[in-house]
Length: 191
Image (cartoon, rainbow, N blue to C red):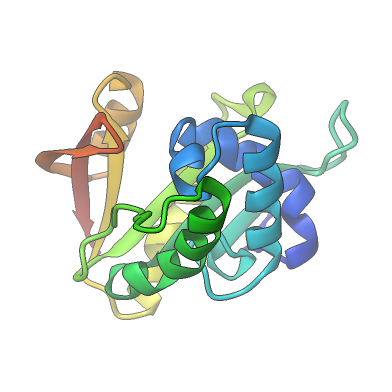
């Protein structure tokens, strides 16, 4: 069952988010220590009005708890690209304190004219069952209901499987772009 996330989903959702975003977690948090990044992201997931807030997340619950006792097997984070900069500001302030870099800036991923799919992640033991597709479709529907005409996302150029999945879901390549030292394809889907 896909449902809006709640603040108390943080302990189950954040490890999935970390798995999907990789080194971007360090950019968002201003630390290079994984445990610190996880703790910071958990705190921001519990809070409101930021990029990784539960307000911007959908979670997928499995029919029963898995071997680790967790019931959340998927998460997707999405938001209006027009407010992406505003959503990054709380993370940026915390990253400045964490890193000691007064001019710390998180690069904006979303374009202002799109509903942005920031993150989608399915637990490894549940992959290959069409659950990622369900989460992506749920985000697209959410964007459509909010009146957005297109959904945007970035996919790592070194992840051809993800790119093919998005192409099968009617996303098309718009451009390549660099973010935090990595190359990404910017893809969009009209809704």
